[in-house]
Amino acid sequence: MVFTTKKIALTALMTALTAVLTLAAVPLPGGGYYNFGDIVIFVSSATLGPLLGALTGGLGGALGDLCLGYTLYAPFTLVIKAVEGLVAGLVFKALKKLFDKGQNRVKKGLFLTVSGIAGGLTMAAGYFVAEGLLLAEGRWQGGIVNLPWNILQGALSAVVSALLLTVFRLDKLFDKVLRYRRESPGTKEDFKHEDSAHAESETADTECGTSRQDNKAAQMESKTECQENETAQKR
Image 1: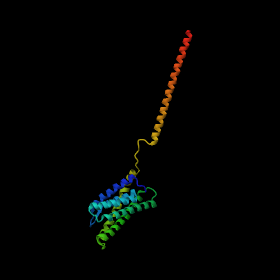
Image 2: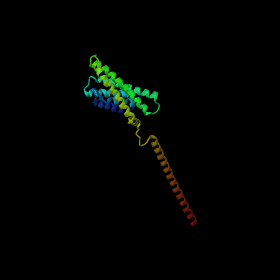
Image 3: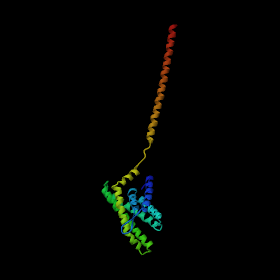
Image 4: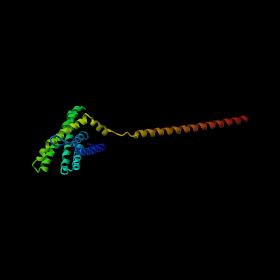
């Protein structure tokens, strides 16, 4: 996989966006919260690839936890969200390679949803282990309480990211950005043609000047001959 300058810039942008949207938490009926950070992770995994999706998820999620003051969670989030992005990207890539050789957007939406759910389940399992070991001191209460909400967050994020990429054509925007090339005023070939034409023009001007000088010399010789003939006739 080639990490171009554009991909690195987009990864930095998506990482920052993941951190910001992690701060935007919406309370859910019956308890728990939903944050929008996973949507960005799934979008990054599908458009930038599994590795950059993992980088977006790990760094963005951990930075969001640090900003919220959950410093105890940050190291776990760094690993869990990175694995989430990696799994989502790998599953999407595999599904697309195996079952879709064309540009069917319905299939693509289904693949995005499935891959996002796979990543979300990975995230829920990771926090289940982390919260059971760390917060509940091996009694697993913390992991059990938050497990349903983490699964719901992963599933909702998978659906939303699939809609953004297929219905709202966000994938097309990423393609345009990654494929965009700035047109230069002139290529090397253009400059070569211009230099060649300039050289030919200078050669033509030189030949024209030489021809004019020859004509002038011929005219002078003709005048001299005429004068000599007139002199001879007078004699």
